[in-house]
Amino acid sequence: MFKHLLVPTDGSPLSEEAIRMAVGLAREFDAKMTGLHVIPEFHLLTYDTEMLADTKAEYSEHARHHAKQYLAWIERAATDAAVLCDTTSVVSDHPYDAIINTAQERHCDLIVMASHGRRGVQGLLLGSETQKVLTHSTIPVLVHRGP
Image (cartoon, rainbow, N blue to C red; front, side):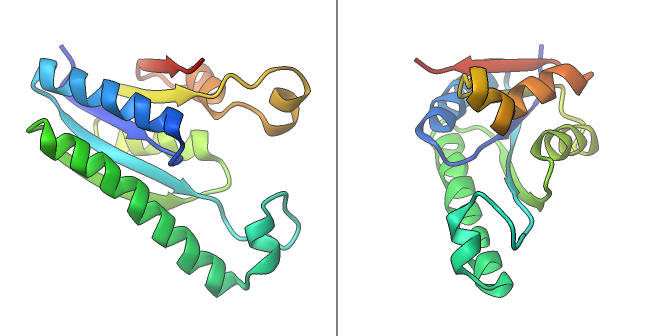
C-alpha cells in the first residue's frame, strides 16, 4: 500500500512512540522510511532558553548534535526491524512547511507523526505543527496521539 514513509521527530517520548508505530507499518508494507528533524532558526528574541544563553554558532552546534541523536534513534529502530531508512535534518522556522516539502521532495506517500494534543491557550500560542501538516498536506498523514 504505502512505499515510502516520512517520520518527523522532535526527540520527545511521544515522537519515539510514533517512530515505533511507523517502523511497524514500514515493515508490514515492505516500505522504506525517511526520518526528519526540523531545527528552528536562531533568534535573539525567543521562548527557547537555549537560544538566549547561546551564541548563534553554539546554538547551531547544539541543535545539530540533538538532531543527530534524534535521527540515530530512528535509524536504530529501522535497522532493528530490517527496514530501509534514510535521515535528514533541515533548518526552518516553519516545521510543518519543512515536513511537507521534505515529503514531496523525497516522494513519500505517507507522513507518520506524533501529536502532543495541545489545546486551548497553549495550542493557540504554540500552535500545532501536526494540525498544520494535516491542514496543508496533500500527502496522507497518520497521527499517533499520546495520552
